[in-house]
Length: 362
Image (cartoon, rainbow, N blue to C red; front, side, top):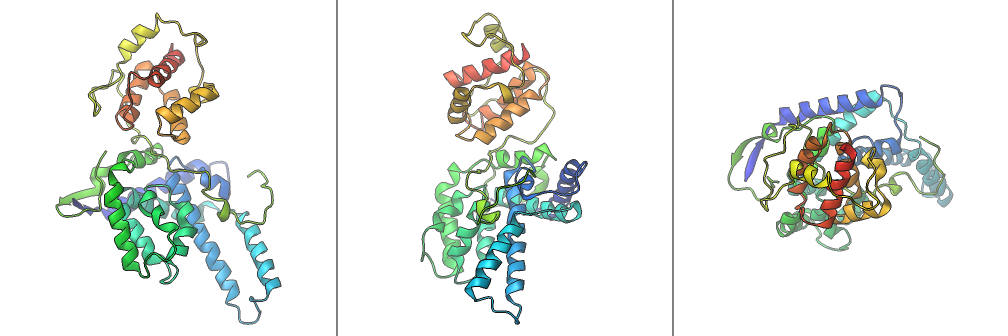
């Protein structure tokens, strides 16, 4: 299915999103550092697209220096000194609001485009690569791709694959068709934006037409010095967050949404059971769940309930901590995670997780 994109909505949403993010961050600060940008929003792709843009600007600055005709930048001593200087510079990112806000707005637009049409976005990335250095371009930028990265990552290490843009674009489209059922839900990805400003997918897609195969409509403390640049260190341990649905008012009664398996958590039944059951070592009332889980619990929940994504677990715990009572918390779990992550409601992991939630609100 193809759609008509509402570019006005996308542009206005991105500007409003960026404004809200900067209002929040710069309320008591004048500058933002590179490490703070990495953690700027819950939408990890937005953060890394900001870093990606800074990397591009950093490269342009380097090329500007090298273009000076009065110095020999091919000299090994000059090359080494310049590399060290640029790496130190990269670790001293210091951005004021007036310069960050447009970068965030641009990153939001790119993130939404990537979430909703990964084929088109990654094909546009191929257009940005030098004709004879497409593979090098992909390798250099792979660490910045956090959403739907499997649509393109299979190309990165295939040196010599394709010798023109058309071959790469065709490979991306074919690979997408093979893996699209395993990609993260569009709703889950866009939901991280909702921590700042809810995104209206219906307003973004304003017209539907048959024929397209490319869209999925579904479901600064001082740093230690090093010889590498800040950009070299990005993305090695980070991962995209298949995030929950955008913030919305949650009714206090149990949700009536039914999962794909026809099952959902019932808060009244859980309360009735947990009020009389006694779990060894689990009798005390908990404080914030985000601070209370034992290491083995975090490991189990991450592996069995949150697709191996520790960031998503952390996001879920913080969202539950913000709920006003057990009913609202269970409704949130039903709406955001049970169906989207296909939980087995009879599993030990689900039982232990919901009991912890009960203890928090007991």
